[in-house]
Image 1 (spheres, rainbow, N blue to C red):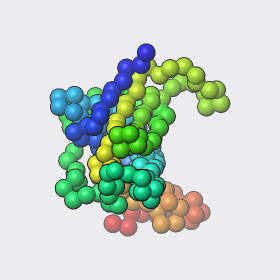
Image 2 (image 1 turned 60 degrees about the horizontal axis):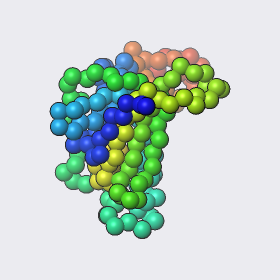
Image 3 (image 1 turned 90 degrees about the horizontal axis):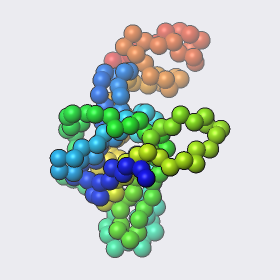
Length: 185
């Protein structure tokens, strides 16, 4: 039976980073009272999770079968720009994530499972050792989406030609046949 790190609802649920742009580690972090859980993940996982939460809320809002108001944007007063809480102890590295809407409790449900060592072409039918489970009301879910976008944008700027990140010393742009482009700032 897996260890379930459940937050229903958390007092705080955010995406954040540790480190300098170009060498940042991304985390999902949930807190309820003194209990704090941090799960490491890739930048792209943060991007996809935030996009999917936003799309899910839009779909639920368009459905109109809700007893709860689904805000179109993050409500004023729910923005969270504070850094990740200390101590940041990685519970596990995120692998598979699931996202759903539970109509019985009117909440977004996010499940994060640990990264496994199995090859991509081999199905892993075993039960996970741990699960990070978060149930969010619609307002805090929109606030999570907004903060996640800001966290991702705070990294290195993207090259306008190839889309790859530009290091402070520049990068070899594949669209410019190896010409070294510099950060425009």
